[in-house]
Image (cartoon, rainbow, N blue to C red; front, top):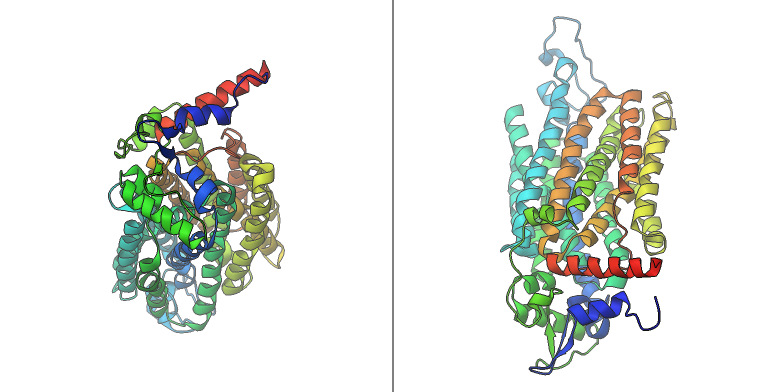
Length: 513
């Protein structure tokens, strides 16, 4: 490419960012450039928004992993499966109220019911991801969706504590799953969409520290709470506290306002960002925020409604979605499988769960450190293979001692990093107009994998670790087919993404020639 050939950046600028509208002499630019040039990419405003929205991950952790402790088999059970004794003759340390297993006798031939209720919860998550992913991108918005989810989570989580029977327990866990499934992607999008491109990836990885903290806190609470019913009641409190004490101070995403045609509200938030960050925007008559689609630049009309069907229709995004869905599915089997499998280890369930959560933290830190140096795809492949490799090693070890527990911790270390990197990666693979809906679809794949995970856990022993290892290796192979997104623009519309891909592809061909 000679000196007279325009670069991708300049071509995109000319195609999508004309600079000034000659009709009214106003400067027009997309959201990312406005942050970079005027409002600030990650200042006090974004830090506050990030911290508050990220607390939703604590709520998600409580709703999701409380079943590890509520559905555990208490120590010291005297089980007489081979005799004619009924469930009422069994003795349990802590009494029948120690767990659902003790209360409803879910042992021996009834053990499958433990995995069933866990799978039903993730089935609810899968449905909730699809439903609320669409609502979050459409009229409800990111903040409105989180508000709805917190109300539902508080109600259904509290009612679970009063379950009169196993059937009612299963139904209420399903409904709790519907409310919990979309909590993570909505919190992630709300926390990261207002952040500038240079800081967005590192912030996106950091949000999952809140998830790990939630697991550690939950483990400590479960250790001191002897009743599974009280534990469910306590685990519902974070949703209520988040609803009342946090969400009122969280701002709606300005990107969502922009794609919905609410230019005035989007501009007001950007002005608030600049003021809080100690920056200054041009006057109201000098700057106009626009979408990245050339057809939408000169109007404040909303972007044409787009759905997941449009993602499949586009040659740019279709293969991305299919590949990401399969990778997410395999990742979830390993992550949730290893997390739930702590009940099959010889160590304390409280210590093992907390240790796995602590093991996730360095995975997040290392990934954030190398995310912008190595790129998304190499890190995703490496972390999934690391996790899969340790799970394969665990399949050859005995159940006694700390060997398999150590493999479990390293398996979580790698897969937690991959699990969270996938969310950042997926947010960059799809434009704002369908971002939450696409993430909801990927979360559905995750929840489908989570539904399958308890089945592998009930197999126990070496078989479970062998399944986790195979899934980790296969997921790493699939990740090779995803495009690298490092350094690429975060698009707002389907048209803008397709146009940008054409320019980048053209420049790549010119460089080869």
